[in-house]
Length: 254
Image 1 (cartoon, rainbow, N blue to C red):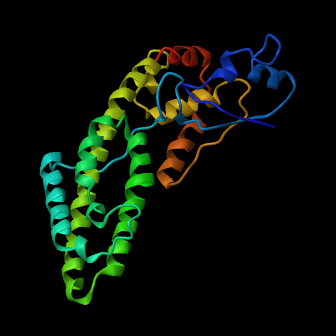
Image 2 (image 1 turned 180 degrees about the horizontal axis):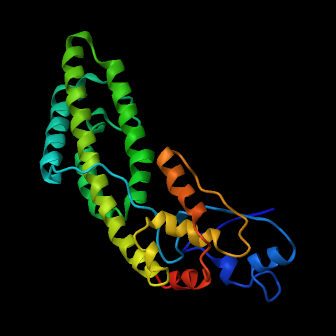
Image 3 (image 1 turned 60 degrees about the vertical axis):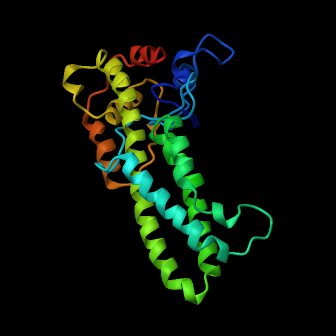
């Protein structure tokens, strides 16, 4: 069995002869009866773009609160922390000073315009913001004396609530950036797919093109929720796309 990454943007196994002969990897596999397991069918890394593109409708919770309003609320609470709590935490001389433990308002204000899409934001939130905030909360809680414990708990509750809403707002903005790009991907796909499939989700179309490709034995789709399962299983009842190769060729110009 051969395992390789393949999706609408990464289709070298289908399009590029690179086996030392005139055939492609998928052609070689078919000739030699080698099963091909495709992974990353919906997580594409285009050659001319930074980062990953998720070939599925972005998921986010709609938020009506303006960024500026929530940003100011978080900034005000961070000012309160610096005034009322930072001096109570001993500083070893290494790493962040306590006064900088909670300074996300400024950082998020700078980062906001630099976020490419939802996948980029997810990476920032999970790998940078969440670990930092969790550590800062734990360290501060350990050093808070009894006289300030209640005030600290009240501040912490208000801050976490305000910050989470601010993060949701940024997530929504990032998701809308993803949606705008995926609209062009969908438009390109629909020009080459039957009309009855135009209303289907992008994720199903992307999986269908892969499962219809000669030489692909199995498509391994990461499934974390029942919604993902139902979305993926739907295409098993579809007839294969007669000519999938032009779809992959057209995506190279995206």
